[in-house]
Image (tube, rainbow, N blue to C red):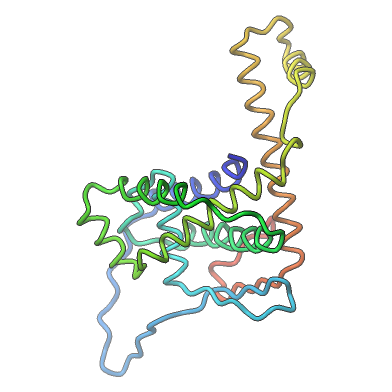
Length: 236
């Protein structure tokens, strides 16, 4: 599961921000002269930079954000309002997903097997208390079931691409484990200690490699975040 280190962190961050946020104040009632915004484009992606623009609307961002949060066990995100910090974190996640999926298509990475996609759809549906709640989620997010399937399929393809791309680079040798433990002062580690150290080293390496892939892909694309409040900080 190569992309869980980075993507899992971003989704977990968004969920933590969402749960920590105070309940939003009720919006004032619109007067007869006020205009109602039906949709808003929050970002435009060109990949590569010379390609046609691909707009990302706020409705689609919220739907993708909720799918990501629910897939990571954040059922609280199914219906609660999403605040700006959570949206900001998930916007970066969605953009990275799109870029990596484009690269997988360019390199002709195999499509996800139908049985694997069916399992993912079933697992997602079973996170809801019942079928009625699942259907209410689809209606509330204006997300047709075929679009949910496409989002999950894209995530699986991204996973497959990263697994192939990282390959042997993410593996940790026994010598590396021994050196890491020795550096901590553990000269006679137990098997459990070695396993824990190996897992930590692999997570760190995978995170670094995935971030490098994403930086490379972003450098080839033209990404415009149109909503000032959703723009990333200087570190991204």
